[in-house]
Image (tube, rainbow, N blue to C red; front, side, top):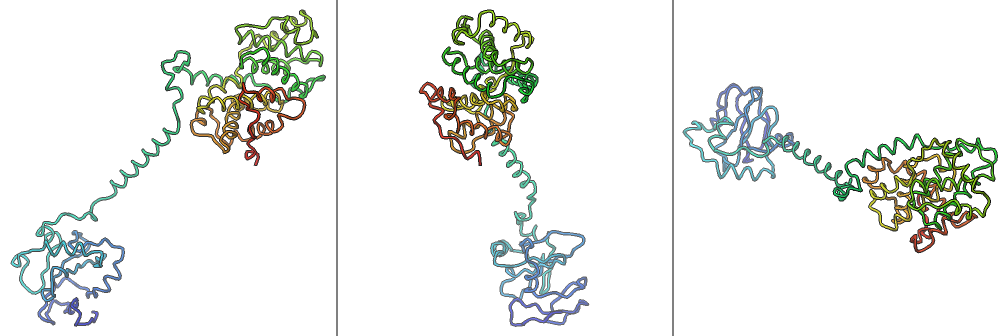
Length: 433
């Protein structure tokens, strides 16, 4: 038993544990075998428990009762809840609940029984006062699960919003072939590996090297521009040159002839109006005859087994620019980077789709001056940002050196108003860090 100050209005005098009355005829049930603790001790040890002093639920393993002392100033405000497992805490935060008890507790004394102390079962007490079950005791796990599900749905909606359907506006356009555009580009990705040129094929050439190849491609860019040919023609021309040189050794004086025939075949494949043989002889300064051109055409077609259909970077470029929602400035800058890459032999180690994606990525970084690669671009290119950084750094370096040296054909082309002065953009040096 614990001694407390008798002047305290909350003081409850100790009693005999055998059921006898020792102090002021206060009766207690004989089943209570433990001494009661002071209310202050109960308050200190019950921090963290759910505060609701109105009632407690029944449990077989615990004994609970509500004790009222009629000698206290306001019995309705002084309920003492006994619970051996965890005692409820009566603090300032429970004033709302105590007020609820005070206003709604109007019990019949005859029902509660005689005596100074009234022992009422918790559920009977709740039924007598007809109080609703408190919100603190309601089941909150379903609500929490529902909240988590709502958060998951919201996150899924955000993710779906980030990936834009770039073919939605072309559903009624038969030229956009929306029905099988995805299958078409899946086929292009499979084919690019089979038509990919080995990046070290120059090792088998005994009379030419990568510098001569760079001079040839830079010159063909100027020829392509003067003839006003389609963009597809230039990319296919370079592809045919590399595929032919990877299978056939060529002497130095025949290298320009290989470039002319590759452009002639590309024009026959892509263009509506094809340059005639005499035009090619003229631009070569009559270095070759008509027979030389026709013989080389036969040799190249037989070497390539008449397979001129190969996915070039331009095929992927059109799709990736659409995914990036590009404007004319971004489009021209992307073409500038991809044409700079055509000249460089070391860029053959990258797949055409990767070259196109890196060109679009580098162009976005150059225009916006920060790394820009959203979920839509990643989805339609199948390349995350970290896989593009190596190729993009090469393009930034080429951009930095484009106006220097002897190979300035591409820089001059993209320094005109027709091509939006794309070559005059400041390089994205932050990508090199």
